[in-house]
Figure 1 (cartoon, rainbow over the protein chains, first blue to last red):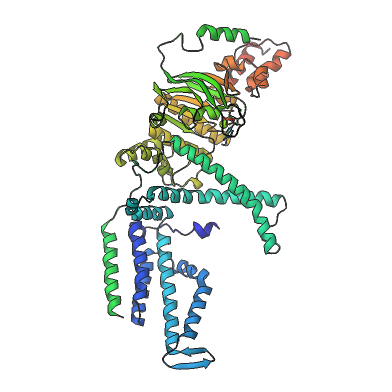
Figure 2 (tube, rainbow over the protein chains, first blue to last red; figure 1 turned 135 degrees about the vertical axis):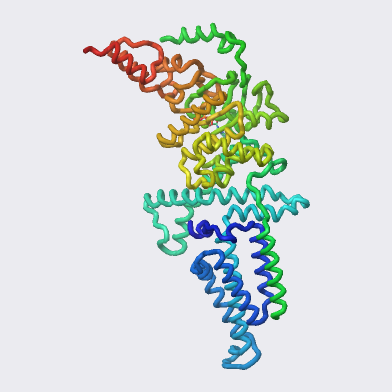
Length: 263
Length: 301
Ligand SMILES: Nc1ncnc2c1ncn2[C@@H]1O[C@H](COP(=O)(O)OP(=O)(O)OP(=O)(O)O)[C@@H](O)[C@H]1O
Ligand SMILES: [Mg+2]
């Protein structure tokens, strides 16, 4: 469980690690958007090379990215097969009832597959090179304009950062509760689905109760330290937009132009 | 045995302070009453009045549920008091003064995990300063300085999940040092720590007290910790049951036990020796003084 949520960020010192998280977040979203511009194999080849170069710059092993694809493998396969067998046009290689294997079907299938891989690689790259807390900071900064419509940007960001900070604490607690239950003879992961669900209840209830107590304590501690909402607060952690962040966006612009030419 | 003398002495001294009017009272509470919602009329604070001098180290003891935490929380407006008045550093606690008063009081609570707000050590220490809107350059300086004071400079970027309980409490202290309050309130701040962690935290507090001459209000079940205070206040049923120097208070012996309180080891030893008809001094002896007393006066060589 620990690996799933926290093992994501891999500390490093590459230029990607040092980029402003806002720039990374926005650029990644933008990149995922322009993937849908690609219509030719040349365009996909360009995107693949671009992505692989970025991965190279990050100095993170390709394994991590391939591992990122694995949990979605069935979804990808299903979508790709759907494309292959239901797209018509071009040379027909094989036909059986409403199923057919056509030239366009194969090409579309390959494109869809590429899209999935590119999107997963890019979002993995974002989470592997950015600590969750920086992402929370980036989200706060990006959402700032929403203050105009009285969206509680600061509070949401604080909530996010406290949630992140308490993930390991609650994990520890879950482990402790499970051990306590095991000591009393509960078997987790045994029996049918219903029995397994029933075994979860005695974990969830104490976890809930203690979370509420923690929240209560934390709120008291925060108030004692003078917390009175986001107004009038100064910030200790600040984000710095540097030249390399602007460069990233220029690159994205150039990539967009190239993709439009390769349509 | 000596109840009368203690009460007499209190009358004579006028419950602290009348004799030395020049000492500034930094905390002054009168007739505090507080009842938790849904507690069927049970008063957690029942007409509690007490005053504490600037620079004093006061230990508050009392059995579970005697109102210690409630008292602490009433001082900086974390509770809505039913009646009574709180005066902190000549500022009466009210809606418009509560934020200035919270600046004057730093509190460390029992559970190290549940008061760690920031994602890393430095973020947590900065939290209180951020709340006050301290400009960033000054904030960085004060955070560094405070973290250094508690000896955690090597851990600036650490997340709380990779710190021990004692280290977390020291970070909590750093957060308070950074805020530079006049009063430090410890609500069983060391009770969840192992002996080593407890020692580290107590040493940090003692050092701090020496350097800044803060007023320290320490709520504790650790009787040895209470023994090092200038004054001990015993709370019982939301009231001040008695107060006095550690020596006075620990001389109560059996009465403390009746109140559900522990007695320091030398006191227990003294009571046991008394039973064996061995004459012992009536005032409080620390472990060392007890050892000295025993080997100088009673060893037969
Ligand atoms: N949140 C609450 N709701 C209702 N009653 C409460 C609440 N907190 C405390 N009390 C009651 O108020 C009284 C005083 O509690 P308080 O927490 O101040 O005691 P304490 O001296 O700090 O005890 P401990 O040594 O266990 O920390 C107790 O009778 C307790 O049951
Ligand atoms: Mg308490």
